[in-house]
Length: 235
Length: 251
Image (cartoon, rainbow over all chains, first blue to last red; front, side, top):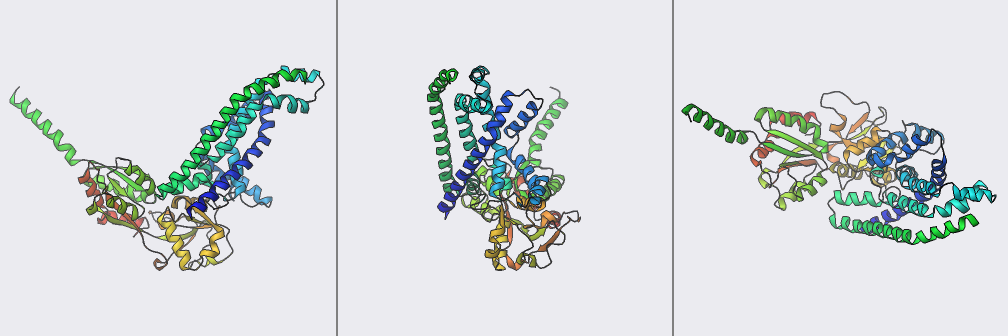
């Protein structure tokens, strides 16, 4: 029984992390691009908001999400008015909570990478009559390749390791909100140490493997980035 | 050294030896559901005996892991019977001190004053989307809730609408925040000891629907203040302590 439960938790966690990473990249790329280039007075408040989950305890974030998304919170009232029902205890609710929670891990590497490109390659591309979209896709993105990779992997891995937020708004429903970390927590709390060790070993091996892969790839991609840089003015 | 000074010094040394023997400090690990009652009882115990009591509130399973790892607790007030029994079997607790200090009572509760009827018939209705229960593996109240649903023949019917909390505290939180319309919680959580009433509706689940939720206390073998610790565990059976325990919704 345990193995099947664990396996279901692992599958659900990977699904959650994949969905969250894709959505966060879609949201994070324009947001990070804007943060890297704007002089708006909203830049600092928005950057601070994005970074909040870095310092807030996850259970605090989860508790307020539970209240906000509940029938008395304004988010909950909005989702009900739209006919979407309530978000807590659902996969969709976990996706939204995880996006908030993993946001800085995606946005910050992207922003740093975009800022590191500087204005010159983009100006050069502009003189060659590349439009804003072409400059973003053909110049900025290849140059920010390492940042994109880091953002993707950190966003994914951080969502896999998420615990406090899920615990607060999940309701521990198998196949919907029971992820690896809550399953592991349940094993430990119910003194099922062998099962806990097994799942912890899987999580540890996965996390280490992913990080190892990233650092290897990052070392190699230095040369790729350099090639892209060489090619940029000619593009 | 003058005789007076010598006498004074002797008295001081004697007093220094005598003092700790009379006033020890008892470090008590207490299950979260009993925290409120434990605070009151500890204050009375300090007043009556002169010993000091320090409370650490948490989950029984975590305390077990911490005791295994050498945590400096003198007494465990568990939320169940199995954890203290396990500690006794492992030689980590003193068998003679093991006793049931409280028996919990289960209620079906809703923040909506009109939802739960006096016989729990609402469970069979479609007037709710989520029923909050504590995890049966983690919390004795969760186990009692499962037994109640089974006794009513509703296990299969409510399963898709069940949300599981990690503790009885979280089970209440899900209901209080309105995310679950109703939930199985402890009587003590929704019936404050001062006699006031939390707005809402409830059904006191009859005793014959679930096995008694016994909570056991035990003195730990590694305690350095075992005398005072034993005194504290005995104190839980005193009339004064019993009155507090009952006011908090336990038997």
